[in-house]
Image (tube, rainbow, N blue to C red; front, side):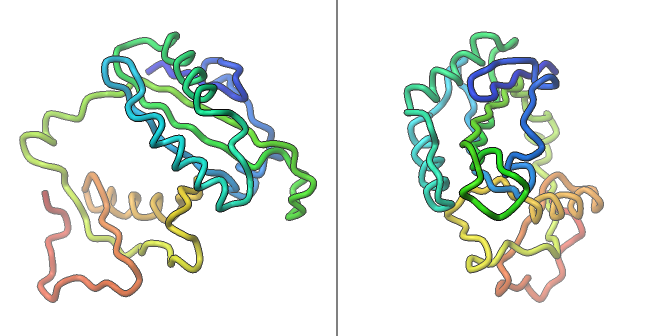
Length: 192
């Protein structure tokens, strides 16, 4: 599967793209993201995604450094070079490159990354049998710890939940909030 990346507007094969190890997105997860998909080779509802990306960045105290038209032009440039018909595009905006400290005055940025990859179809099994889900022990982050209105790139709880679901032989996890409880009747380990 061939993927492309754009780092601050410079397009390369994804495996050749480079972001500094001192980028706050790498060192602290200090970044936000959005995901676009295409229909007919065109990004679907980019304006809605760009507005949410800006709101998330503003909650973290930095700006998305490009106008919507520029972001869309960067996405279109990736799509123009993309093989296949439909794509997944992940847009990541970090605060920028710092000095591996919490001193945000020392950060130069932001950094804008776009990753394009072909969008594979869902497996036929999903349509025939459904998606197998697992109730997992991992909980959603508490809103006072990490505001859910911020679409942050820090998705560690999702990774832990997915690992648990996959260990149970499932496709997707179901995460509850800290106060929610499962029904008294114990659900099967994995269900569709």
